[in-house]
View (cartoon, rainbow, N blue to C red):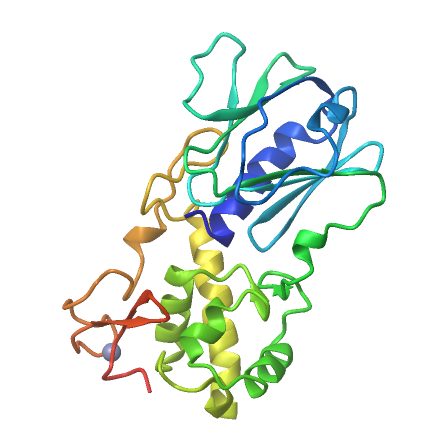
Length: 271
Ligand SMILES: [Zn+2]
C-alpha cells in the first residue's frame, strides 16, 4: 500500500508535470471504488487547468482553475501514471485524462480500494474531516506530538497508525520511528517519557524524509508517476527483519502482532 512518502513522491512528480496543464479530455469509466461515488461527474474537469497539487496524509488534492478540487486516494493498488495516447492500457483503468501536451494521465486500481472524487468550486472535502494533522505539516511539532501522546492510552504503535491523530504514518514508518526513538511499540502513548517526545518526533520525520529521499519504499509493487521504484526498503532497521540483529545493539529483532498488523522491534533497546 502506498504510504505518505510514496504519495508525496508522486505528488512532487506530478506537480512539475501537471501544474498549468489543461485537461482536454476525460475518459471516465465509473467503477465502484471503496472511497465511494464522486459528488460531481469527473467529466466536469474537461477544459480546466491544474492550479496546484497538494497532499494530506495519503490523499492527493488537485486544485483546478475553477477552484474545484479533484481528490485521489490510491488505496491498496491504485496507480497514477503518465502515458502516450497509443500506449497499452493497464487492466482496471478507471480514468484517462487527456492533457494539452498530448500526454495522458491514467488511473488504474485492480482492487478498487482507491478513491476518485471531484468537489465543486470552493466546496470542502469531507473525506478529510476525520484525519489529524499531516505528519509533514509544519504544524506537527514536538509540542503538538506531546499533546497528542498525553491524550492517548493506546500502545505507541497503534497511536502512530491512528490517522485521526496523525495523518500519513503507516506500518513501516511507525516501526522505524519507534526504533529510532528507542521506544517500545507496546508502551502506552501517555507514558512516553517527556525526554523521549522530541526523539520520537525526530524519528517520525527522519523515517519519512529518508524514505522521500530514496523515492519511497517499493516493498510491494509501488512505482511513482513515471514508473520508478523507490529504494527505502534497503535502509530499514527493523521492518520485516525478524530474527536479524538490531543495527544499534545487536539484539534479535522480534515480530509481534498489534491490532492485526505486524510490528517489528528490538526488545533489547526499545523501552
Ligand atoms: Zn536494539
